[in-house]
Length: 99
Image (cartoon, rainbow, N blue to C red; front, top):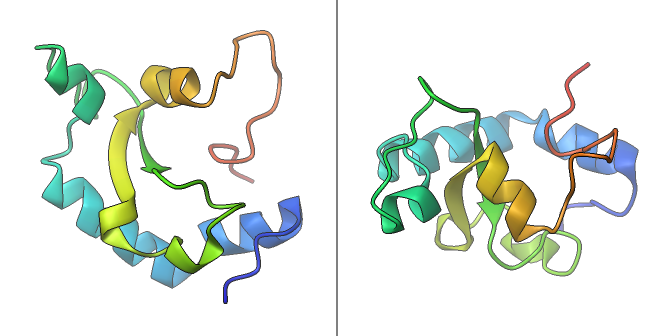
């Protein structure tokens, strides 16, 4: 099972070749569009927003589904933040922060 129990472990996971490979597969499958925006009739692509991969069943509770494409979907940064109830006043987001 993939270790995602600490910020350091999650960082290692998000920089792994396995994650990068599955992330690309999901982006390709979803035509590089935010699925929530698409559902609302908007087209949001990497040209207009930052696209992120969302774990439908959250990573911290279902690490066994971390690399399962059926548990992943493409969302833009704004929709991903809404989905996790993250607000702009927060300074750090370990899912998008890059070193």
